[in-house]
Length: 77
Image: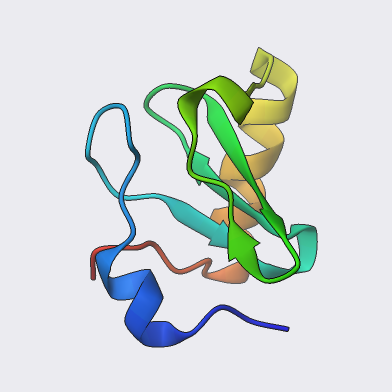
């Protein structure tokens, strides 16, 4: 299930307060500036820095390419 568009308008990275990329198919939010991935569990974004996953360069490039190809929306729009 997709996150509510109103929620996406206000979600920000808890660390740098910037926008996130929303990958509905992967149930994740991604901060490309910090290379941090936030999981979405049971339709609830887990926005805890301690629970975020830092991705490697290859995964970072994959996510950026996917975002560009799919027109992935960002939060704080």
